Amino acid sequence: MTSPKITVNGERLWQSLMDLAEIGAYDDERTGLRGVNRLALTDADAAGRRQVIAWMEEAGLAVRIDRMGNIYGRREGTDPTAAPVLTGSHIDSVATAGAFDGCLGVLGGIEVIRTLNERGIRTRRPVEVGIFTEEEGVRFGTDMLGSAVAAGRLTVEYAHALTDRDGRTLGGELARTGFDGPGCPTDVCLAPPYAYVECHIEQGPVLAENGVEIGVVTGVQGISWQEITIHGRAAHAGTTPTHLRADAGLAAAQIAVHLRALVDSGEYGELRATVGHLVVHPDLTNIVPARAELTVDLRNPDDTQMARAEKALATFLHDLEGSQPGLSLTTRRMARTAYVPFDEGVRKTIAQAADDHGLEHISLLSGAGHDAQEIAALCPTAMIFVRGEYDGISHNPREYSTPEACAHGVDVLATTLLRLADQ
Ligand code: GLV
Ligand code: MN
Ligand code: MN
Ligand code: MN
Image 1 (cartoon, rainbow, N blue to C red):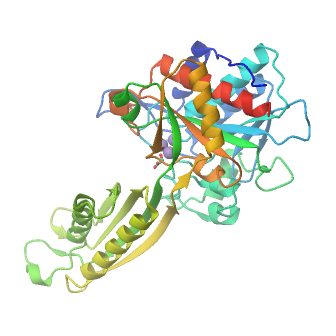
Image 2 (cartoon, helix red, strand yellow):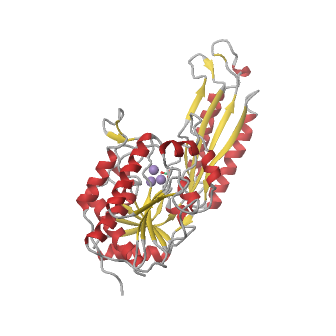
Image 3 (cartoon, rainbow, N blue to C red):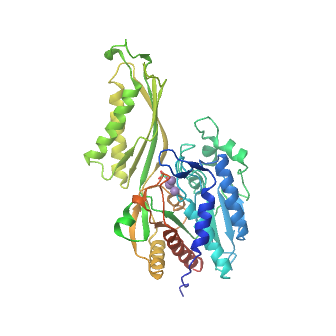
């Protein structure tokens, strides 16, 4: 028999979201809004983690922390041998974030636990809420890092050795902030769950454009990140003839323009390309740049088209080296994941839950990366998307989903988790 639907306390959920957003809050000069800056394993992230652990413990969850600083809170079921149903997301943020990215999934999971407790509902399977470390990848350079280690795609040793721009290692920052587990016999503290469901804001305009509340996510598109360092030669801006320059800044600009041309050509499917980080050295008005560092972020739902785009970029970089005497460049792979499809059975359970709550839903692909794409390697997985305002803008303090939209998403999460946990 299918378990009945359950409805969470939307006001309590909203209060938790707003309380967590105070940790790492800053006044954003560009928008005039209050934003969130909780880069992974900074003091602000550590304070956020301590707050969320306190809420987990208040809700009766048994908390364990693995060697990546991933945090799991567990509510036992009636069958001690049954694999748990896992939910969760991340609370680390980009430097210019809003209150919702990742936090909705974590605090939504805790709100589901509070609701189960309040109603005295015992599930057959345990229910666990996970918080994954460095989902954003903007501090240590590899995204979905904690969940990728939890799922066995990357090793703990690889992750611990990654450094931020100031040369601090992830392993050192875990130790400094006190989040270096293990609080359990294994490095990753995670046996394969029965299923994983993540609730997240959409971070795009599709749900609003379609006038629906809920997205049932079909999968996550591929992500390719690399860092390019261009080596030129510092020279006097006024005296150095153009043909004698090795201008790293010019080459960096050419890469950005070429990426846009690849996208606009339409020859690489639904390719998206971003140069989000670009610095030149020595960064002075009257010096031809000696060095440039930039990052390239490519996204594509089609793995073949992604590989073609990567190859086209590599060819361009090769030709670019020969375009100015003395110019050379090196590339470093930061992160690479293929398209990940989500489980049909979990998607159906989500869609049924949305129907039972009277919420209109559509299926859509995720443009952003999520921890679910990693946990999908361990167990049947899918995601619930919640509608955002202002074209679903995200990675921006303007990011906003209404209290009602958040509550509706977490209602669907609650009913989905309850049904899976009773299977
Ligand atoms: C994570 O937010 C990503 O999709 O870059
Ligand atoms: Mn996120
Ligand atoms: Mn994000
Ligand atoms: Mn993300």
